[in-house]
Picture 1 (cartoon, rainbow, N blue to C red):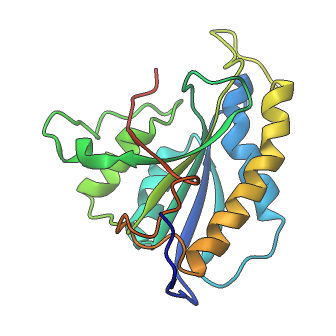
Picture 2 (picture 1 turned 180 degrees about the vertical axis):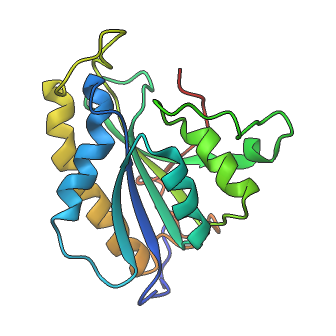
Length: 196
């Protein structure tokens, strides 16, 4: 449902976090999108960072307290390769005692563990969305440089989608997680899933 009277947010703090491993094929998606977005000029309060697999850096960035966090990543969701999704994850699992954010791997970035670690360290954000792209090939055990064609095409689409989301958020169309001003054609609500 859309809001008829959005609340303009002139300078909200927005973190756009590209994540992924450039040596694992389509897993490079988030990093590639971030690199593309870093070339643009952004309004005050918007920060674009290619975190790659630097999970601790992302956790510390989340301590800054943001109005909106956009995590950009390749995420298998069962769609055709290159399919883009905007997902609002259900982060209630972070409050579970079973969640162990301290077990980090220096060679991968598990978004769930990083979000859990940031939450334990005191990180808070008003709204978090995942900009996901369905991968075709994550490189396997041998790894692979370069993304598949469908995912490479998805980089530009994701960059345009993120610009729209940032503008919509600043204009009040994607408010602070109140569930009333979220256009249902833009954001899909889903449970967080661990990546393997």
